[in-house]
Length: 209
Image 1: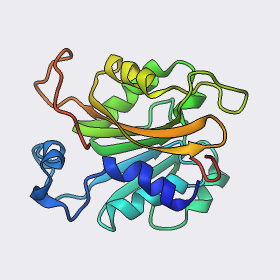
Image 2: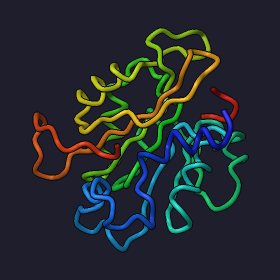
Image 3: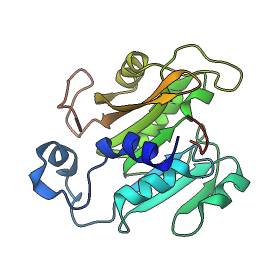
Image 4: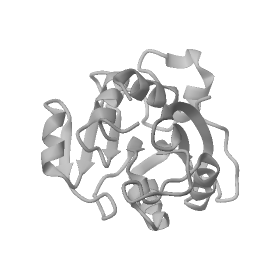
């Protein structure tokens, strides 16, 4: 994949800084108390060398704060300045809170038991915050991509984790599994029950594709 593919996978799920009130579906995510007039905070979990991190930074603009997390310190060095990096395992507690959004691009397919990780990730998001996943369109893995998941599988995983409004955003061809897709899910806002279906939202590494 090239940079344009990365942008295309992320862009439909990210409220643009200049969009304002003209896009109603973005307002549904940005109307939480305190959401306006503050620095938007995002994280890229399993960032690797930062291919998706840099695409995210381009889309969010200079006013956002991004934390790129990966176990590989050498990989993170490739990201460069202007983005906070943290050498850590995203399957363990990270002490990240009240995030507007999280990107997990080709990182969850390394995790066999996704439920506890997704519960932890949901706890990092503010009410109405969003999780964008990028994944291969397969439920069968291989030694290099052990636990991928199709979009229908992701819908079930997200719902079980207490996320809502899941929507597929985009897909691109992949030489490994035929295609790769992106999807966004929202953290429930305060007062919304586990069984309620909220309104829908919008609608990894370098070298993978």
